[in-house]
Length: 187
Image 1 (cartoon, helix red, strand yellow):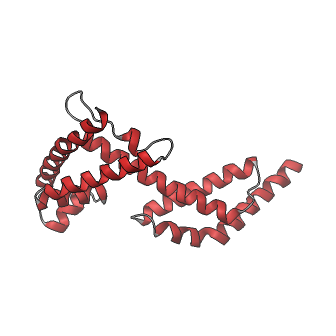
Image 2 (tube, one colour):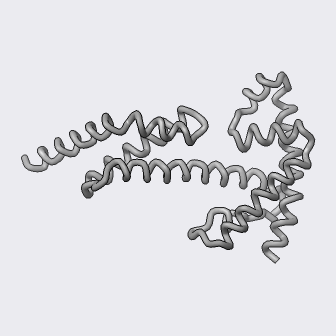
Image 3 (cartoon, helix red, strand yellow):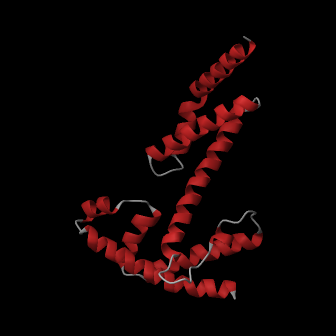
């Protein structure tokens, strides 16, 4: 009987927390991500994390804990997106794949990794500026802004296959350009 009462208390705590922090937390997340769907997914992950933690130990400062978890989940989402971008740009047809992940997503942030990360992004954007407008824009929309090809085609009136081709040329250019940086950093 005691465990049933404890479970009721945990459920009550979760419901009160969701009611108290739900809208504010969702607004906070929406301001940091690209879509409402992403915001709602992150919020669901937060509620799941809270329910898991509550089953093991009480949360002292609930509001602070929720916003900290939200920031971490948002960072994780962008990190996954960046890793996906990197795998697209740096997965080459041959066996010489470039691995930037060690300094872009290190286990610990150091002044050196911060410098390398900044250098990488500067070089990526410099390489993007070298592209023809059509290729650069498709790459930015597709990879950095996560806009599907079909949506780009509808907005621009350009055939999806043409957009895919433009992005492919952009990726080839970026691989070539960033290989120079990679070679300098790894030699």
